[in-house]
Structures are given as C-alpha cells and as structure tokens.
Image (cartoon, rainbow, N blue to C red; front, top):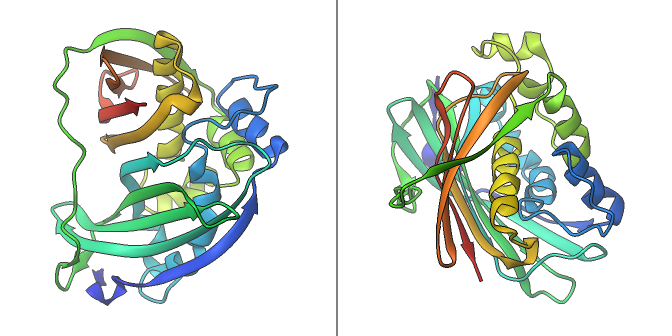
Length: 268
C-alpha cells in the first residue's frame, strides 16, 4: 500500500461538543472510577477529538487503509483545566507525514477552544499506518516522546476486563472496529481486538495520579509512546517516578512487554 504526502494540510472542523456531566462520568466509569463530581479526567479531550477527525480519516487516500492505523504516539497540552458544562469547539489538521520502518507515520493535530475562543487543549495524535509506504516526507518534523530519565519503581497493577474495549468505546464515544469486532481486527492483521491506546494511557495516568494524589486540574501535559498492543483480559503493571512537577512512567503487559514507554505528566 502507498500513501501520498499531499494529505498534509488537510483539515476539518470546527465541531462543537457539550461536555455534559453524563459524558464525563461515563468516561471515568470506563476506567473503573466513580466520579460523582463530574471532574474531567486529564485524558478526556480524546473524546471530543475523535469525531472531528472522521472526515479526514475517510479521505480517499486514508479510508481504504483505516484498518492499518494504530495509535503510536500521543502528546496532549492542557492550556486550561476542563469542566463539565463547557462547550468545546475542536478542529483537526494533518501536520506531518513521515516514513518509518513499520509504515507511514501521520500526525493529526487537534486544537480545542472554549465558547469565547480561548485555547483549551492541543493534541498531537501520532498514527502509524502499518506496512504503508509514503511517496515523500512532508510537513513538520515528527517529534518523539522524550526519553525516560528517572529511576522508575513499580506502583501498581491494573486488571483489564475482557469487555474493557467495548465499554471504553461506548463511554468515550470513540468507535473503531479494531477494538470491538474480532473479524475486522484479524482482517487488519491483528491477533484479536485490542484495547484503545488512549484507554491504556488513561488507566496508566489514573494509577500515577492515585499514587501521588494528583488532582486532574493540576495536569498540564501528557505524552507517551505506545510500544505494544493490549489484548483482553490482561493485567498491566505501571512503574513511575516523580521529580517535582514531572512524573515519568511506563506500563507493561502481563507478559512483561512494554505497552507504554516514555510516559510523562507535567504538573502545574
């Protein structure tokens, strides 16, 4: 499969969303957390980012290879804390396409603003289209998550239920059949349905926040590299370390393989 770098610059939106309490609480519930105060999880922005990307993901150049997409890298900057009841306007633009050994690495940049136009969040979603060849590199140089520099120590385990991907799909309102349709996932070259990368990241962030009693509003940046797939059911283990306002972490699956590397939180 080949991909033309002319996709760089394609954009969509704005698309508006009401961050209602039901959505916020449902997202927390998908992670096994009660959230009666409806305080958005730091990774909640992925919920309103997904819908606006649909028109780009279905472009003639990208639609036929949608099943080859895996979430490879993520960086989220939170300019101001979110709150239930806000109306968010989100846009997306493809800012980079680079050839990597496993396939074409494409970066989707999501920008969200409040009703007054002030910035809320900016995310770089790094998508790897497995086995796809680019005609040429284009756009911004692709950034990579910063290497881990702190000595990480185990902080806890996360049990992932067999139904986790289905529950996360409905609660986050993120629909991709590689997470729920076994036949589709296998046709795309996967061993079975896999857990969303953002779900694995959100579980890991929650574990880190509990360890150091971090409030969601204190998180200003999240970054990581997705290094492996999570099948279900499974048990994940998180290791982390903190230095002031920086927390670094990694997550392993129950076979000891890394599924999230170079994880980091930056606190205010």
